[in-house]
Structures are given as C-alpha cells and as structure tokens.
Image (cartoon, rainbow, N blue to C red; front, side, top):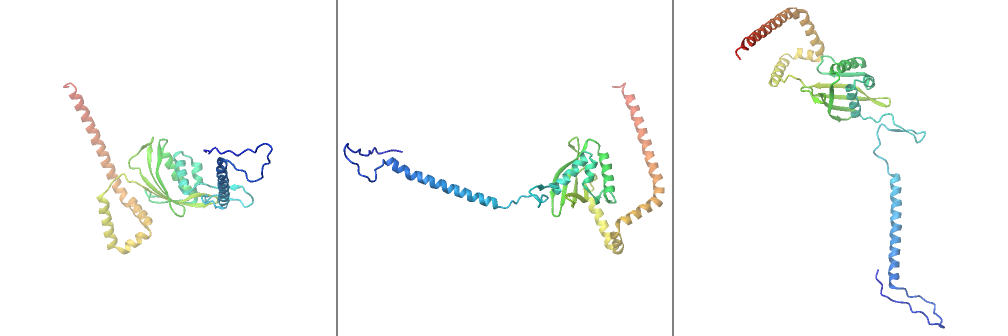
Length: 286
C-alpha cells in the first residue's frame, strides 16, 4: 500500500505537548478499516459455518438400506441382510456356476414353485427344485456357465433376469433364456419363492407357429365346451392323451420306427463301404 510521506511534527525541547488526537499516516488510517472488514467477514463466515453445521446435524439421512435395522437398546447397528432381490438372484446363479448346493439350498424356500417351460410339469417344494438343480449342475459340467446379461428389479420383490450359456467364456448358440423370480422375506433375509424360466427354442418354426396358432384357434372356436374343459385342466388332459398313446399307439408305432431306424443304419453302412471301395480303386489313377 502506497503512502504519502506525511510526518508527525516532533515537539521542540522545552515545550509541552498538547493532548489531543494525533495524526496518523495515511497508510495506517487506510489499513485499519480493511482489517476491521476482514475481521467482520471472518466473523460472518464462522457464523454461517456454525449455522450450516446445525442444519447438517438435524438433516435426516435418506439413503438408508431398508434391510438395515437399528437396535433400540443401544447405538449398535444390526444388519441382518444387505442383499436386494437382484443381488439374491445374482448370488443364485453364482451358486449354480460354482456347484455350491449348500448355499443354493439356503436361497430356496420350502414351498418354492419352479416352472421350467421345457418340462410338462412344474417342480413344487424345495426337494423337487433342488433335485432339478442337482441334475442341471451335473449336466453343465465344469466348463458351461450361466452368463447374466441383465437383471431388472421390479415391485414387490420381483426380479427379471436375462442370460445365456457360455462354454469357456464363449457363448453357446440357442441357449438364451429369460427368468422371472418372486422373492419373499424369511426372517431377516430374502429367499426365492417362485420362478418361471423361458428358454430359446433351437428349432425356428417361423411361419409354422402362426399356422399352428390359426389351427388351434379354429378348433377352440368350433368346440367351445371341449375347449373350456381342456383349459381348466390342461396337464391332466395331456397326461391322459400321453397314456392313451403309450397303451394303444406305441406298441404299433415303436416297431415301425425301429424298422426304419435299422434300415437307415444298413443303408448308411452300405454307402460307407461303397465309398471306401471307390476311394481305394481311384488311388492308382492319381
């Protein structure tokens, strides 16, 4: 800060100085108000900081996990389960990939209802469901794994999962699937109560599907009473038709199928022998 070079007059010797306001250099006169302003600004900053801290203390914490419970007896925090439904499903597929039946059993409810649309009948109860997964884990071996593409969590503890199968981290064709899960609260954790699994069909019927749908619709419209009975108990009627086939038609059809299978085996073996003879004969002419 620049000064004007003013000096206070010094009293002569032998003279008495008069008490009064003393003149200060302009530099000091200017610096004093700035110091007061800095002090006042600092005071306002501390006051605002204290006010903000008080608001922060009384501000409620919103991002608490819904599975986190605080004990009323003390300040200790009890966390029974921090897993969301989507994390439960990811853990479910991890157990299948690692062949961990013990941990997988903990994720299945006793009254679990599991529908896999490749099978004609659903699996009911923990034992039937676990038996299915035991066969599944045995069938996939050590190289085939579930690859989870996307997991979407819905309302009321529901989860959608899209997946496909990999062999040594390489996707296998025609193995894409979509699964729907319903979870339930069991004590202090979540378990799987219901599941529906839809798998991509390796046979792409295309227009044939529309043709079959048109035929089924025609039958339903022309035979409404029979359709109503069928729709009330479809599995029972399908099982009845299967039993009729096994009793009356299989004894007739099975020998015919065996005959054609053996005939095609004989034809393929004969063609193989003829091809080997032709290759042997053509070698000297090369």
